[in-house]
Image 1 (cartoon, rainbow, N blue to C red):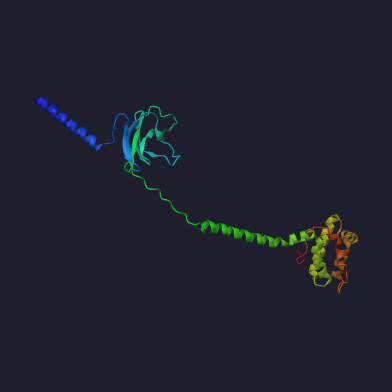
Image 2 (image 1 turned 135 degrees about the vertical axis):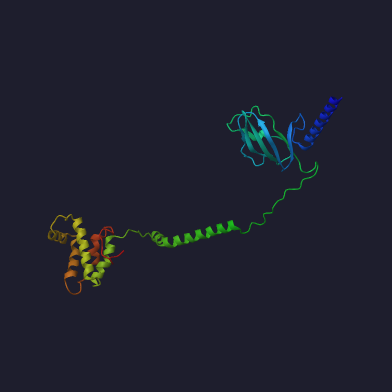
Length: 289
């Protein structure tokens, strides 16, 4: 009798423990048919702790589609012999029954062979048949002004101003081109002209005249290939040259003959220099641009 009483007590205690487990731990499978592990509602977090799964380590799939009904993450991973033990955390965005295997993959890229179902159920928040409210929409209102419009207007005004400035500076070029006037680069004659006219008018100093004479002597000596000749022979050869002689003779006269300069034809004196580039001679300061 004593043994039977003890057995009855143990059986009663076991029944109480099973009832407590069923009452306080609803995350155990609800039935053998669907094997649902956890139930939650839309937007609420669900957990599956200490789930042992065979095979290489798993990880969540990258979220390529933001409209997925379930968001899954792995909180912790533990080695469990040759397998792994996982703590999962998820939340559903839509009601329904979902298999968390659809959101997992192997780290080494192998298939999920041998992984048992991980079904969870997400219940709707509203009772069945209740109409959901319409999604809120924001009226954009009339598109007048705004930062983008202001920026576009600024760049339009800035571009117009730049075009006006460019047109102002390029106006002489287009006017000359329209009138058929050819624009040639400045020649050495153009740079010598103000110096020669200043010498004829007595406006150049002796130092300026002497510097101009030295510059022309150096130019013609090199041009006539007289670098190895004696200075006196080189000067005589330059004076006798049809192109170099006229202007050098006038310069010598302006430097060494007292009194006002005699009249001279500036155009004829500068004729040999019209086909020469403007920088062919290093002229003294004040000798034109």
